[in-house]
Image: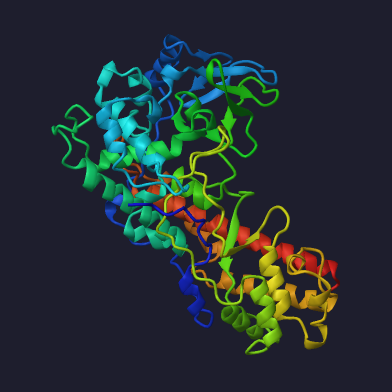
Length: 521
C-alpha cells in the first residue's frame, strides 16, 4: 500500500459553497455538549523533577555535552550570558534515536511491510519507522542506551501528556476545526495509525517475527509512539534519516528562535544564533509551517503565524456568483476568448478539491527543520496570505483579471504573456484592477461569512473555556502512560486554530483593501 503525498489543507470547509444565502449558524456562548470526561484537562508537569536531572546526567554519561544551559522544569534556559554560536548541547550518535541505526533483522523485516512514503521512492513512511524504533528501544528496558530519555518523553514522563496531534481528535470534536480538508487529514492520520497497528502489530507479540521481545504493542501505545515521533523528530540530511535528539527535542518552537541545530564531529549540536541573556528560554524554529501543519504534527498552533495561508480552488461558477452578488458584472457564460485565456493559465475549469487522505513522507533538506515537510498547498490550490509578498496567488489574480476584463480591453492580453498576467502591482489596466480588487474583497468576505462562528464568538468561547478550567477545583490526576490527550485539550486547540485562521483571512482582506486605497478606489 502506498500513501499519497500530504497536501496543505484548505481554510474553507467545502460545504460553505452551498451556504452563501443561508443565515450563519451561531455557536452558543457556552461550551458545546461534550462528554463529562472531556472536562478532564491533561495537566503537564512543570516541575520536571528528577526526570530532567537524570536526562542531563545521562547525556554526559553517553559522551554528550550540556553546558551554558540548564533545566527549569521541562524548559531549557540560558544558565549564563551567551555569545553568538555558543555550543550548548551535543548529542553523539549513541544518544540519538534513529531507525537507521537499528540492525535487528526482525525490525527491518517489519519496516518493509509499512506503507510507503510519498517522495517517489520505495522507502516506508518515516513516521512509522521511527515509531517502531521508539518501541524497539522501549522493549529493551534498561538495557537500551536510550532508556532514560525515553522515559522523559511526553506520555511516559509523570504528568506530561502526549502532544495533541491531529490524529487524536475524536469524531465529535472534528467539526470544531471548521476546516473540511484538515478534518479529512486528521481522519487519514488516524486511519493509518489504526491500519498499521491492526495489520502488523496487534498479533505480533510472541511470534517468530516479533522484534519487541514479547512486549504487547497496544493501539494506544503505537499511537503514542507515532505522536512523539511526529512531534519530536527532524530530518537529518547527512544520513538521509529522521532523528530524535534528547534534550534538544525539549525546546519549544519560535519563529524568532535563539538557537539552531547543526551536525558535526561531536554529533547533533545546538548552538546559539546570537547573544542570549542569562535566564532566557532557549527556542528552536521547527520549520516554516502553517497552523494546519503544526496541528497535524506537533499539537499546537501559532497565533499570528507568518506562514499561514488561506487556500482555495479557482471555481469559475462560485466566483461568478459571489462577484455578481456583491455588485460585480461577470458575464454568464464567459466569452470564448476569456475561456481560452483561462485555459492558458491552467484554470479553464473548476479545479477539483485536493485529496485529503494523505500523509507526509519526504525527508527534510534542512536538518534544523521540522519533521513534516508538507507542501503548503497542492498544485490546483491557490492562496491568500496575510504576510509576505505577493499576498494573492498570481494564478488567482490572473484568473480574476481575465474574468473581469472588458471586451474592449481584451487586446491587453496580447501585449503580455500569461505568466505576467498575475503579477501583484502590475495590473492590466487601472479600471480592471479596481474591479478585481473589489471581487477579491467580495470573495474573502463571502468565505468569512460562511464559517459557523465569527472571530468575536471564537474569542468569547476560548475565554469562557479558560475561565471554566480555572475554576475547576477537582484535582486532576497525572496522565497514565500512553494515554491520548483529553477532549478538552483538543477542543481548546481547535478554537485556537480556527480563530487564527479567520484572523489570517481578515488580514488578507486588509491587504486587498489597502491596495484598493493605493489605486484611489
